[in-house]
Length: 444
Ligand code: ACO
Image (cartoon, rainbow, N blue to C red; front, side, top):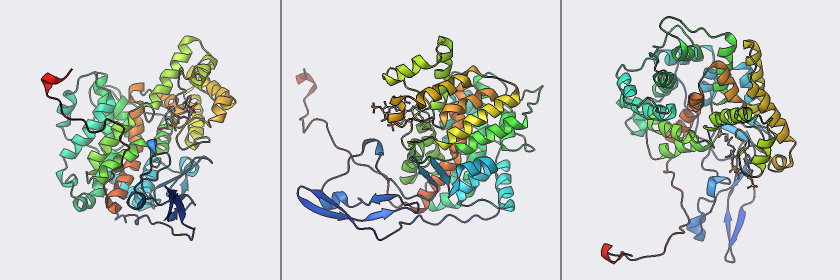
């Protein structure tokens, strides 16, 4: 394996900006201003409580920078997304999922030998320990693949005690192996959970296949019939994974960093990230979008009734809106076109894509959505691609998790290398004031 240099510690740019002044109870306090490389400004309030006695209240963390990070830059107002400086549009056009994974994890685009070495490492880490079958058999057949994926990602670490010591230096020593192993095996676990759910025999991975083809083989080959994807299917799935590879301090990545800050190993941290991703307001939205489009279709609505329901708060237009983007999510633009390309190549049509297009144009010209700056996000079109490939809806968020693995790994690494303090927010307590204990027979 070509040695990979860890990216340097993120540093605070100290541009000569005047301090910010905060006045509390008539007294003024100065706080330094810090500036990111793209000019993002922040008031450094790390000493706020110790100097003023106050904490900052920011439920949902919409105004809180929880870390310094070198990995991904988003300008939500302009609809910009870059990994290590490289625009997502260029990556989507010219890169592959594994090449982008390398960029995100190691800080720069790999040269040919580095990419080959990275691919080999992932290919050689493909096989799952045979005992994994027993773990799978322990789950009821009705288990959701996301529950299986998060449990199994943590269980995976049990087979590699040297990589999961929770001794930071030791875990870092094995980082390259652990990263390749997770990127490789998350695919097998995902495919195995699908096969188990469908009552189908498991497929062993094949070393002659590339990353995405191997996943499709494990998902869809039968003992009597090898699945051979068209190049368009492979390309669309690779693009799907690439576009999900990282996205700054979202709910699941912040969870990974939170768990990592306590010193937990990479496997435990990403397993927590998978749980965080599951919810319908986060990665679960891609499945919710398809269910929503299907319901609209089945009800005979052209989308207009649904838009009205969303405006009145009776429904939520899934795949729309974003905490950070107040403009088009650039990934949604790319995926919308890719969905169309894939369907054309397969000679298929999908009524759900037509409904999605109608919803999009209705929402983009409706005052409610315009005022609130609600645009399609990454989940709006991604499900159409997955559905066209034949991936069941219950697996959609699992697909997101496979794609997001490089981002979680890179963020874990950043915390493990640089973070000296455990993440530990404060709260404003709103419960009862001191209340004496009442013995059980005196309680009403
Ligand atoms: N449909 C209808 N109205 C919406 C939507 C939507 N999808 N999203 C936001 N709004 C409205 C809210 O009701 C609120 O209106 P109000 O000001 O009248 O109360 C306003 O827009 C602001 O919305 P918030 O919920 O405060 O925005 P927040 O930043 O907290 O939430 C979120 C962002 C969770 C993504 C939200 O837009 C949403 O629920 N979208 C649908 C689910 C979704 O697609 N999630 C995937 C996000 S991308 C990802 O995680 C991979």
